[in-house]
Amino acid sequence: MPELPEVETQVRDLQAVVGKKILAITSDTHKAWKPNFAASRQLVGKKILSITRRAKYLIFKFSGRVVLVAHFRMTGHFLIAKSATPLERFIRHSFALSSGIFLQFSDIRKFGTLTVCAESSHEKFCKLVDLGIEPLEKNFTLAALKQAFQNKKGMLKALLLNQSIIAGIGNIYADEICFNAKFHPASRVENLTAQDFVNLHKAIQQELKKGVKNRGTTIGEYVDTLGKHGKNQLSLRAYKQHGKPCSVCGGIMQKMKISQRTTSFCAHCQRKK
DNA sequence: AGCCCGTCCTGAGGGC
DNA sequence: TGCCCTCAGGACGGGC
Image 1 (tube, protein in one colour):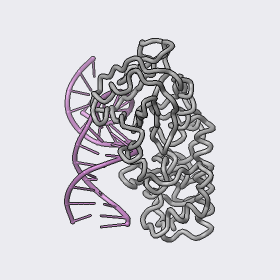
Image 2 (cartoon, helix red, strand yellow):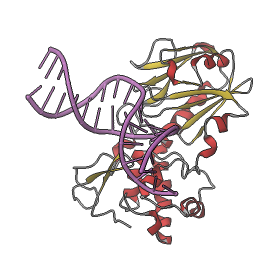
Image 3 (cartoon, helix red, strand yellow):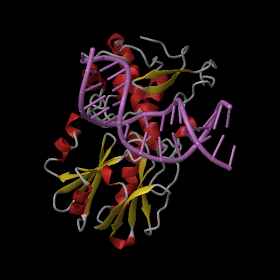
Image 4 (cartoon, helix red, strand yellow):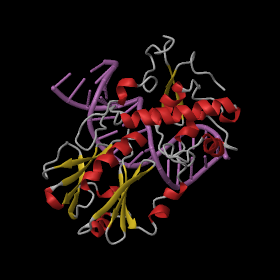
């Protein structure tokens, strides 16, 4: 599923369409559009001025102070095509751009969302204001991590998945971060020591940077805008590894549910705090 | 506040 | 072959 590294990879590739104008939009999944499909008409004739990322959201700024905020949820991704012919079977939305380019939104499970709103209100309307700290930004310091976790209680993995604390981590990277830092995912954050925070801070940055460097994790359907697979799945050590031997100690990886998500971990290497 | 559940959705994979 | 069942889960709303 697309998380921070996958969205970041897409946003970097999508710079290729900045400056293009939207000529037409077709969609067979009107429900994805917020507040409604009719709002998509506001984008037609507008020029893409910038494409940026906040957490797992993609933010397209257009001429005329209009913004499109896209979220991939489980199975969404953009593809850049040289014709209107769908590059994949599950293209739900297609944007005809100037220069004969087509931006296609693929989304098997139809969970993805496309929100159109005024630039002045998009952060509030799309709840971007409620998002936590960006873990790959300079201001994500050790002190900032401690601050974000201050007065919080609960299971470590649940907090890593909470977008209002740290923004952009999903199920894959949460498992990898816990494994990297040797924390049992059900560790109580209120029990973490100063040294634990040092290790956690390092692991968050390492795993997300590795994901970006590898152009994302392809498990299931995620691909980049050219349809190419990422490489991060080749170096996963925890996510979906239950039943397999631990890459460190050789013990069999365990499985449990945390926050409704399947969680894989090594009961020997990852200590419960 | 923390935690759980249901909802949205559809393909993959298992069982028979 | 084919049908039914379960599973996968990001965000959100609701309940305890």
